[in-house]
Length: 360
Image (cartoon, rainbow, N blue to C red; front, side):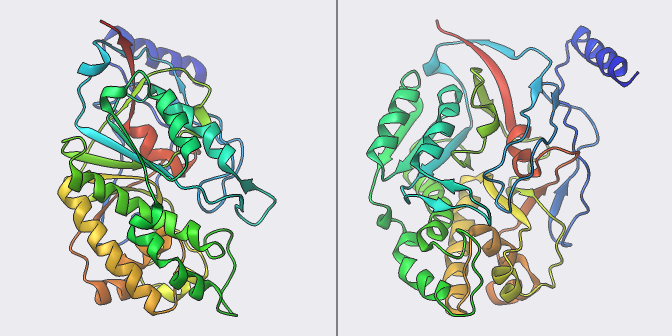
């Protein structure tokens, strides 16, 4: 009966000329009185039908485990254009830093360069302007091949990672991690370079805004492995601003309902996650404000002998204690995952729109 209802629902949508994205996500209660929580109960302005079911559990970073990927039931929007003419108001920024092999989580999972190389082919089908930062010649060559049909809107920077402030702090981060009583959460509080790489997200996106590599009003960070579950799909897609986007804030995935009364000491040491760092987006000028705040926060918490990944930094900034110390001038907009799908990737799939590109 349920299958028949869904089939009828899809038929009605298609015959009316409306493409709908239907995500099976469950509501999570909002956290913090000053934060915007977006809850989508209507189905307006959405692009395709999606079902998302979890096969396996993810660890506390959203990485390392697989979920059954979404399936698209409605046809993609058809856009007849040359690659050079594809319109977009959103620049996507990503980075890969060669950290060698490292343990991920508490089990036997390890990440290597090949892990990221295996995830990267998704970017072949992204039609947005893309800016890539890396210190790996191998990864640069790979991305050049993957983006060979998108040369007009791709910029790849092969750079020394110490040009960015987070990687200039690895010695200080190491000092924190080397404290005898400091908990070991692999790799967040074990490998200083990994922690720095998470902080560098905000640095490279801000650098992209300042350089005006592509003069778009909006910018998004996207992890190399964000769409790892659909690597096998050969379908062009465009990342768009999500419905209900607040241009005065930076948008993140809401991962878990956490009290703002929790102390940063507890957040960092217990590896507590409130929002996910796999993707975030905002207007260029708001991104710059967030990066300035984030930089100040990292310095502040290092002085307190605390450090972890960006997810713990963000939670600590907006905790009651963090607000008093750092007085943030930019707020976050939280997108609230729904249903049994993997909440770590909700925002990205909400922004992802299939397109059919015809060369002219």
